[in-house]
Image 1: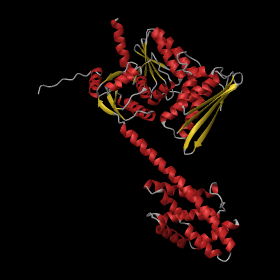
Image 2: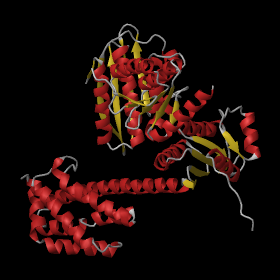
Image 3: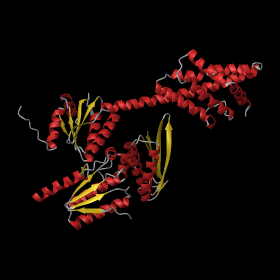
Image 4: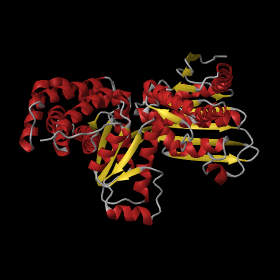
Amino acid sequence: MSLLGERDIVMCRQMVRRLTQQIKFTLVDQTKMITAASELSRNTVVYGGGGEMRWEIVAQGIRTGLRLWFEDKGPGIPDIGLALTDGWTSGSGMGVGLSGSRRLVNEFEIRTVVGEGTCVTITRWK
Amino acid sequence: MERIPILKMGRVLLVTIQVDLQDQVALGLQDDLSARIEQTGANGVLIDISALEIVDSFVGRMLASISGIATVLDATTVVVGMQPAVAITLVELGLSLEGVRTALNVERGMAMLAVDDRNRIDD
Amino acid sequence: MKQENAVFDQVLKASPEEFIKTWVSEVAATGSVSGSAQNDARELFAAIQANIASDADLNRIDGDAWARTRSVLAALSQSRAAQGASAGDTNHFVMSIKKPLFDALQKDLGADARGALQAVWLASTLIDKLAQFTATTYQRSREDVIQRQQQELLELSTPVVKLWEGVLAVPMIGTLDSSRTQLVMESLLTRIVETGSELAIIDITGVPTVDTLVAQHLLKTVTAIRLMGADCIISGIRPQIAQTIVHLGIDLQGIVTKATLADALQLAMKKAGFVITRNKA
């Protein structure tokens, strides 16, 4: 789904809620995944200049999970290390979204090229 | 744009958040509350989030902001009804909501504000 | 229908009741048999016959063509797993089809040696695959049962008790790992909301060691409790643990700690505004 405006952040949360309910995640796991999606979709809209989210229900052996991709063709992140350290005390910014989301999911991957864009992939297993 | 209703009960402003907040609506609430506190000279703000299933960093920051702004305007803020799943997620997210007072429910929140009010009068 | 399927179809249609009887006696003769064997055999037989008749590929059992058989096998292994049957038994049950099947094929194709050999080979590999599928599903079911039991055990070992009006307590027993902490957090927080208790006492008398990781888990729990508008007391701090905490420089962030649960309860009551008096005997 496309993430272009504020309304899309809400739509994204609702979409992820539907998906996590479909897979029957526990309430806490649902909340964590939806919150992470909210953070990352906001980053995409606000810092990435808009982009899209893709999802896939994945399976690995016996377990089932949900994988989400947040991709934009924005400015990219120059210093990932810095962005991933907790940015809370510095106030607003994408820092909290990135480092926080990482703790809410089981797998977290980020690919970013300055001037080309960013793609964050998160996975949560049941 | 949607606006969250603000109720006045005595010297307390009561806000119940029941919808999945769009960022703009949250900011709108912040503005509206600040204006109302000033207008009414309220000395307490109670925000009921018992229906909120997701609190991300944006909403968290909004709550902290409202709390800060209210304090400057000489009013106390209490956030009540946080759901367990939300609390667990906020802790994991790393948001401590420092400076925001919380209570289990509206009843306790009002009691907290009343105590505060009494202390205030004693000043 | 494909030639090979037709051969099997004919053989299966010949005398189903006798086929099933031979099958069940083979199961009994070479291993243990469950009470439902007769019915299970009938159901599986019907599914296999139906799938073969609809021209399912005899060389592979994945795909829609074999869906019915797979679902019967899955149900079979699930019920056997729940009853506590061994993997061997369930496997054995499926494998025993070979006896009546080979017998029937031999009777039907006796004269045609090459044809018979080919049919037997096909039959054998098909049954092997079905048995393998059954074994895998069985495995999965057992793992599900074990996981559920583990969860129940985990829940039982960290009960949340109401000590007094507005005071809850959780005796932690055993090592505090992240899944344990998660569970305690969930049940404790839920109970806090349900009972409207503003004080939770976490007793760690039963926790053997407290290192930085354990302390982190505890702190997370306390933060969550405070976020919700309640507060927490940690009791059961043994002298050694107190030393470790100081040594490791762990910051307890203003959490009140007490040596015993009794002390913690006393403090909790006081905080909640209760005064206890004793009547003269």
